[in-house]
Length: 153
Image (tube, rainbow, N blue to C red; front, side):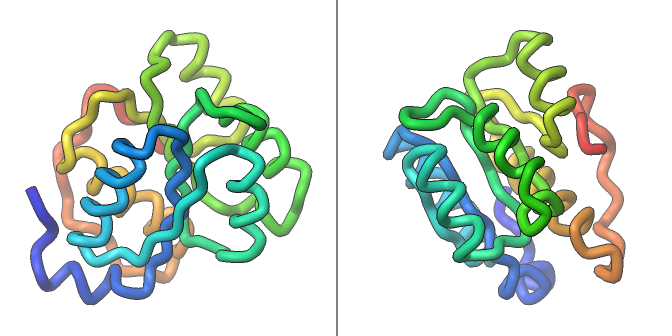
């Protein structure tokens, strides 16, 4: 389900950094976010993601775990060490869905975790909550029933 036009104006200035080494997944996520009204930036590996974070200053980041050069856990670790990056909410979007991976990602600072394959509506609702989480002055999001796998902290 695509976001309603009324919500699009609230999202038009929200920049999301999407990090995935799979070009098909990267394009799919970016397309869905842009249709919903978000501004997007991309990175194809963890090392590029860290560089882009400082440059782009996104409202939130969607991060894969399995990537070359620096994996998602490495990105989370580096973010926790840098005060200028520590406040950026992160949604892990990964095919790795073992409970230990989820627990570790959350313990390392991820705000939420969504397993691949994913539903577009679930991705968009999670991103909307991430952006709201970062901006406490934003109006409350429309209430939606919680997912059974919600991890937002």
